[in-house]
Length: 190
Image (tube, rainbow, N blue to C red; front, side):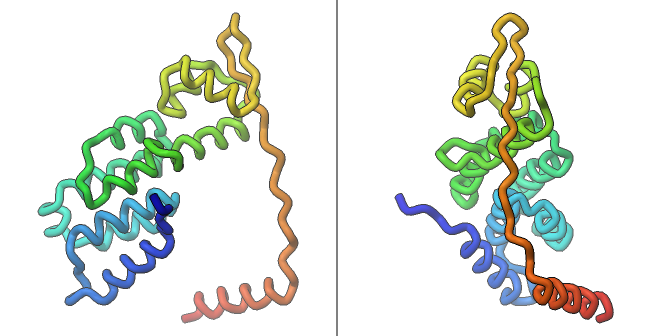
């Protein structure tokens, strides 16, 4: 099965929204776009999309509110609630995107974000707490932690994350920084 380029899909959906008669596309466009924003961790984009969806469309499409419920939990960084809210039978319109977000295939976005957060924030965490953050049973969470090369202290049931080294980044050339600053100031003035 070919991998879906969600960036291109997102661009197409945004274009459909802009080109829609009266600026209101069919509900499935909003559903897919909102779900892709969540998948891409663009919570600000998701929030503004939710605000511009007409109330009549929200009322007529209850799944939109369910998708936004997942978004709200992501916004609040309430990962256990995200796993609960996302564990739902989604319509064919958004099912594959939600699978990618939830991690029912190889592309496990929410769980990877949680693992990276734990690696950066903790030197030790209980297996039960880690399991909640990654939406797994404690035994499976311990196995996953070991697969990441983390330590595990059996008597205390503590997982010992190993932080990832920071990725090196090339400094932005001064000319590029000035151009971006000028664009930003111009944007603020207009």
